[in-house]
Image (cartoon, rainbow, N blue to C red; front, side):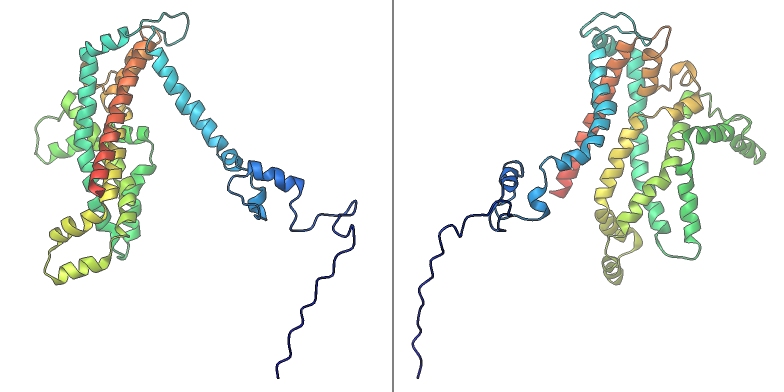
Length: 345
């Protein structure tokens, strides 16, 4: 037979039992003054939060980011803003007094044929280099992707030009392409040409040679990009397509290219920005004048000539051309982002 349950009434606590004794610590469930204060400076911490989450300050992540923010501000934001301000003046490269000229530098730039020649060279450089730099490293990555005996040697060999200095590579190409260089000497001994090809004296050949140097030096770098992207393309798709009778070309266009499309967009954007900023290749192959009569000068080369010459330079005008180069680069970047979003959609 079940015994009835007897409920005992709670025993009342003696007076003063709930009071905290002087010098004793508060009970674990009772928030102290420090915890109550931290609730107001710790967003996201609940009243019962404990451990590190309760004592984490909201400004702590910003503290770790402070060196990067300061570096970006000092070496990026401030120089850019200063360039924009200088573009409205007639400042000299070595400093001194200057006057505010408003939009005069921009009006001069729009009517300057040398500026448009440099812009044409920069755009031609990008139009020629970007498509090849997007496609050739991909083909090279496919070539060295397979784990074959000795493939590591070829990967290292293709990547070696990336490690070399641009000046060293430019000097090597000078030796190769000069009138008595290796290329002309070999072609003449093979009776393929009678006279030396003016690689370093003809304006168009200088520009094409500089483009070839940029491609040769960048192939290994972007090959690494594509090797990482190809590792994410499922091999089962290639095997299924091969079983269905698809050849290598069809598998490339319908499986490989869609699988690395995002990397192709990234490579195209980086290459386009780099092509608009090219300077060393033109300087090493075309000389200090940028080709005969300055015919091969790109925008960075032109900025150096008109804005940094200590005797005849105009830092204000050079800053205006720099702003134009920034606008051109920004437009290319925004176009690439739009194409990327349309591709994702």
